[in-house]
Length: 324
Ligand SMILES: NC(=O)c1ccc[n+]([C@@H]2O[C@H](COP(=O)([O-])OP(=O)(O)OC[C@H]3O[C@@H](n4cnc5c(N)ncnc54)[C@H](OP(=O)(O)O)[C@@H]3O)[C@@H](O)[C@H]2O)c1
Image (cartoon, rainbow, N blue to C red; front, side, top):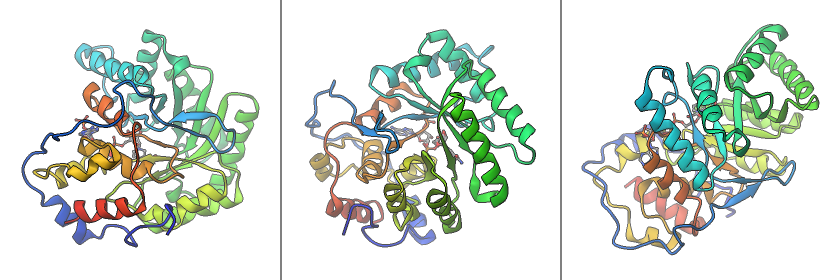
């Protein structure tokens, strides 16, 4: 069995998730320290199309960056600390979207205020449907809100719902902007749980030369293990994994369970690291993008990019444990 394959076959069933969600109590600190040094570098992986190295843990901005940064000073300071923690800890990628309310504007403000734009691999999306002009207007607005004239990655948002012809036309537009140097990389996303959305991405990866795909992948939603991750590797497409904690559903599922002692074998000392290391153990995953408004969670998530990763046998054991 390769690392690409699902260790137990298939993804979590609805019944599995109900069992997961039935966990009780609070998580317990571990009686061991990880084997890596506190200042060890976060692992990086190459973007397959170019070989550029990217740290494997980034940050998502849905919901948590959607507030009025002009009036909410406390939230603004907290999000600034999250970004600072990410950069100081060795992370680089931040993912946002025009559909996340005020997230792009807030992020743009904070990047300008802290002067760290150049240290960030900045990814956003285009959701506009319909005319080419509507797409252009939305992408121009994103650049304005993010206070930048270049983006590292532009992704077509949620292609699972879109008309095929429209996606092809949008990709052509994104390529034009890439050739003009406005975008360094282009890609597509989805966050659905249906296999049909994975199939759409597989088809696009095989027909179009995508730089990145962004997919829903967590210990609660593993359908990409069936085929999509293998196709990403075959087609030299980088993979970002959204919803890596299934929107905190995984933490609720293990509430009351201590992280098992054998997690020390892959240097996981928290549930956050446990869940992220499961994903990162798959070599096709380029970067995970958990969302958090807490610097301590950001630091915890970065630790998933340090130390050892579980092998295939260990990943089977992890699934059984979380699902027991
Ligand atoms: N179609 C798409 O393209 C698409 C769709 C959905 C999401 N996304 C991207 O994926 C990103 C991630 O999704 P998400 O933020 O909705 O869900 P998520 O990352 O799966 O889960 C976020 C939740 O996990 C908690 N958390 C984070 N780190 C933790 C830690 N170390 N320990 C304990 N709890 C922790 C957060 O708590 P706190 O809130 O308390 O910090 C929050 O409740 C989004 O921000 C977005 O960029 C893309």
